[in-house]
Length: 345
Image (cartoon, rainbow, N blue to C red; front, side, top):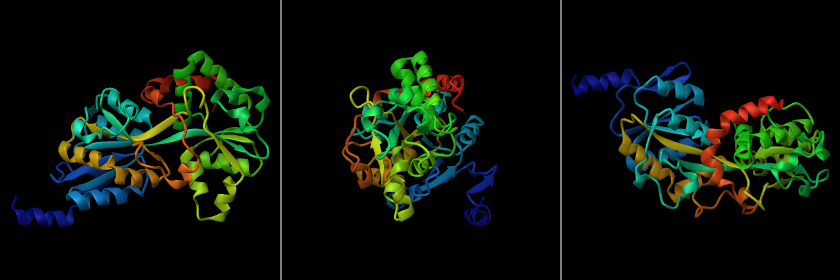
């Protein structure tokens, strides 16, 4: 095929097509490109990828989809994918355990990234993280009563707690961390106690739980820091008012620390452009880019030398249960069983 014909074909047949709801990369992507499979669904990430392309000349083609769909694509040996950027350690763990990731080049991971934010086998690295915190209505709850996750099962909190469903990856990760800390039996006892304290059946996302507190439907909720921060940093008075009288507790500060989870990236086993992909990983971990990537969705940068968004910094420093991160995927299946037996639907 002559270059002229190739150029003409390129005008009529784009490098990516829409298939089953996902944008699928061409079988032979350009050498100066990186194809990213992403389950983050953050439109703000596009600005970061554009900055990478401007600086390096390497095009970033993003295939956005639900993790299960992306995993099915990978297991089907779909060509052209270089990186997986996913939300939640459990998804990265599953991908790695399926043999779909390769070890990251050492040069792509800045030594400033703490080891707790990296896969022990070097197959993925974190990009940004969030904390699972306890939020309370200042007029109706005492923060001393919820200083630890375990306190949420105390009968004195009967009918006062709201939280999203047991199928939520955020709650599965929380229970997985409790299994890691206390064992399966204790985690199930805790889940039963929590269910008994529900003010209503689980419904909606984390934003819905904050709205329930503001509306007087409950006194205590379990949410991710990024959802609280979205309201607190909003330019809409109707949203800032929702969290105006809510306090935030980082649980278990005297012991293991607050449960966290992260968005991370892995280099796919059959990546056609491993060098360009490694360059993108290194770019995402650079201090200036870390600040942009994390703050876009009110997440904490994995680099300790990069400050979080002001709305998060205002909450103060806290001890994290970072040691449990690498085990959240391992304990996730057991966590789902525990929650089902406890009636956390």
